[in-house]
Length: 619
Ligand SMILES: [Ca+2]
Ligand SMILES: [Ca+2]
Image 1 (tube, rainbow, N blue to C red):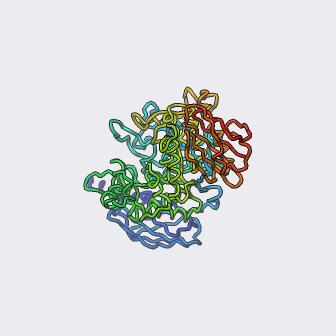
Image 2 (spheres, rainbow, N blue to C red; image 1 turned 60 degrees about the vertical axis):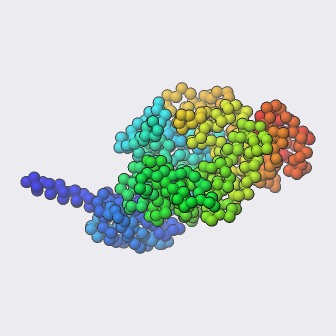
Image 3 (cartoon, protein in one colour; image 1 turned 180 degrees about the horizontal axis):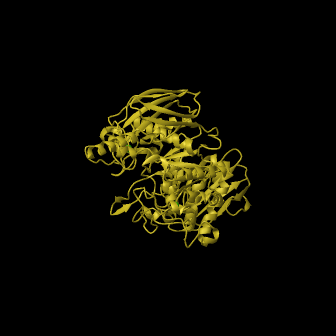
């Protein structure tokens, strides 16, 4: 009797296993009409899957089925011809199981109303959604996730901010002069809180991705992301998605049940990356150092993807194409760029560009040296490997801005450093495609770097909005949020005051801001607004002059507009003789000060306030 009952239960389980719900398939759906006719499906089940299958749908051809060591998986290569119509079809396996798959209609407005690319015309605002604004308190805790802590008093836990909170403040951002939003990764991070040093830390920052096809439910899920992207596009704004190709969270589904032995970069015992980008361009580098740079893990709980494995590469490439088409995002920022297999990086950029000709990509390559930053983008250097990314996060310029703001301009100190750094731009194919910034979620906040000195803060913001490149502001910098990363990153990732119910202050409104905060906000807004209407600042050429007597001068100009930018790093007011700049001033006789609005005749001398940044449009 007992035996019969058991076999009944087993039979029931088997019949349940025959249902389609037992499969997970990645990409979760696809589109008819894609440029690349090939699609590789990764099908996963909790039981073994047959490696024999058939597909019957007009225009869809099954090219190949491959089964890796782990029989829970098959990889199915399909060809989807140009004539294929949107619809659904079954993939039928020889053991009777079947899988329903959907081809949707591809958007016809990519490149115009969505997937537009992000350029030097734009002004990016970087947001950590968990810390910006809580638009939906009901999603703060998800009981089916591994981390159910939402606790604003804990700097290392989730605080409950979400995508709806970002959408609620689009008008605030637009008013500030921002037109592009980059959020730290929004995809699912279903990880428990992890031990980092002495503390338990959550994946509130988003960089521990566990599913590339689901937006984290605490951020509002896929629907909230759709809503934000669509609302932003309606307001003429753009969205950058933050990608992580290098690693996944330890509870990613392909780590819990790996498709094959070499899905991850494996070592006999734990091997961390050496974090030394020199290994790529160093003529004296050893092979083992390079192998450890690429194949070593970022930290122990972030398994390193073997991007040289064609199945892994395809999985990541298709997930990036999927997110671009599904949500209509306008550009990508790629985390930990320099830790990835180099050929993979070029391949994914080519694949994205083929599908979305207007898409733009900039990678995070944290280095203080221009040749190293230039190495990871299209450049003019004679290197063995040529990268094809359009832009890079321009850390060398950030470091030079810090010097220019904090020190008096000398030979290589202060603005001398900035002058020297920009002189290296000949290494880039197009430095205007670099993302330039004063701070980000991994750095000390700029107002603290500037010594909490509003004059030096304005010098920094002035440089940010007038130098070549795509300027990026970190949330809260416009309202003087401050702190060093001491004792941890959490200090520079505090909640935006007013973003959460019950906040005692609301700094999204001028009434809620202190006078000095309004001064900072208004300064940023005024210059951003001017920049938005100035082709010379957005796309113009640059001419810089050797810093002299503590004053650094550069021009941004095109055929119709000349903007003169002057950084005075002296602690006293300074007179600047203009004779030296006649090459660029030419026959222009008046100057409009962008910040004061005053227009004056251009005399032979300018009076510069102490520690100041002056922007003049010459007529
Ligand atoms: Ca929430
Ligand atoms: Ca790696």
